Image (cartoon, rainbow, N blue to C red):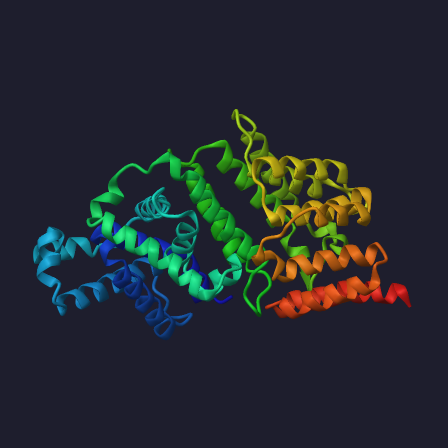
Length: 415
């Protein structure tokens, strides 16, 4: 990941948010185009010797000037001037001053809350925010959320239309964010981190830049008056537990299974940070999915080895997770933990008692876990059949290689 791509990932949302705050949500499409134009210009113009001292300021001014040039030549110019007095000639020079770091961060948080309007369906909130503020392509969003690109476009369009109709001025982003939307904001950050931790990108299995961007935004949120909650703190703990292990998750051959990871390479400083945030998160009166998932991650991180992991505690945690945040993917992970604690037979009973949704039963996740458990339970023909189905459904060479390695180990043990 080169520096330009890293800058894009880090600044895209900031630039979209600050321009939206200044000119209004109704201009979102042109704002996104303007930011994209600025980044493309930077890619063509910047070199290690010509990168500006304030890259963010340069991108902001370039995007803003492109936006103004498009408006000045459009039929909507008079309407824009009437609705936004800031565009009068004597104000343009003042407006072109690059925003301060705090202003950028504040705008991004406000935009996150705005995108998570309760009146927008949750699935549309997520697609809109990932595309508009996190810079994801529609294809990447569709892959990560296990939906079709057509469906992703529809969800994005619904959210964009609603915001355009409801919030016709920039002033909405100066209002106080509504606390009821925090859960949706946290979900967006969770998905952003997850995409970095195991990317849906066909050629890149791990994207650290996304993980660190999610952590940065979560920390920023936790320091604000709108996001300083136990749930946010627990999410930060979860992220730090996972980022501690990220270096061991891949080697020269590709992705590395948890059982094969060199635990001496796990980042102890990140684990200590995670434990501190997990402790802070217990000061509230409620427990969220992030508390439970952080607890599971903590159990892995403090275990001296895979074999010495307290699988009973992890199984109990997944049972609790099924009560407070039921999810088919949690069920799969529950089955994997159950196999370590009670055996593959018990895990298969658990999975066979579930009715997986279509999106999961058509993905590699379901067939890979079923095959793994069937190999371990000596149901070889079924295991081979599901292994083939899992490999057919992968969209990443890294995941395909990992599954091949996993299945080949079972086959070698049979010889």
